[in-house]
Image 1 (cartoon, one colour):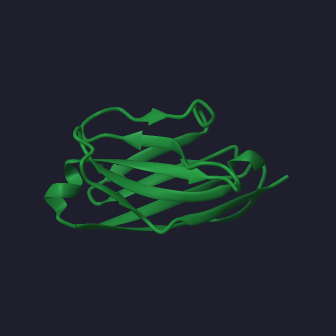
Image 2 (spheres, rainbow, N blue to C red):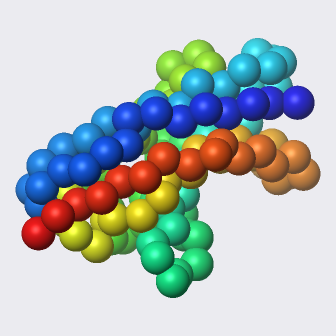
Length: 118
């Protein structure tokens, strides 16, 4: 089992920055073998991938956040640095850990709210 706890959300003006953090607990061996990602869900919309970083590989980003967001991982933590925020970035951001490459095990955090005002 892996538990994920997000922090760092909040209210920011357009053009500002926020840094989200996700702390993973459980089997360190399992965590290091998992792809860690950030998903987001805007009101009335489906959850979508923002960024993901598989173990030992380069990160992948949604086109809408490329050049503005940076995902990184350090042992049992994963971060999402968000710069040049836009109102359309508003939503609940969820940390995800998924077995790599099988995807058989999938864990989610409780989510953290990000609100970008115009």
